[in-house]
Amino acid sequence: MSPERFEIVVRGKLGPEVLTAIDGFDASYCTDGHTHLVGLVPDQARIHSLFQRLLDLNIELVSVDPVREDVGGHDEVHPTS
Image (tube, rainbow, N blue to C red; front, side, top):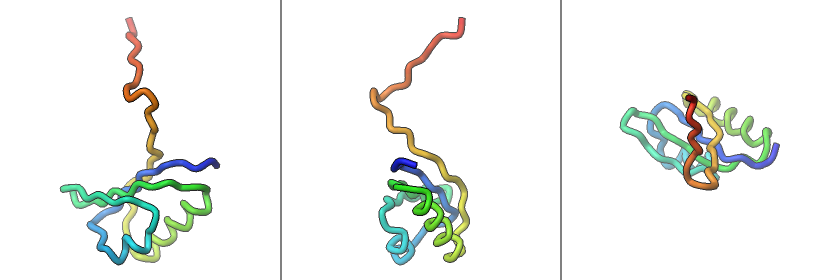
């Protein structure tokens, strides 16, 4: 696995102590009560250790998605007709 950027969404607002334990990720908070963590994951071992840390801290995982790096800024649109 080559390094890839991921967005991890968890339930609740994480405090500064928890965010310190999850270093290497930028956090943002949404009005829906979720925390979005975005960071570079160099390999599967790192993502597994992060999942284990969230589990150990009793933090509910909502979603995990790779972050697509747009090169041109816009997706190409192809007409279907």
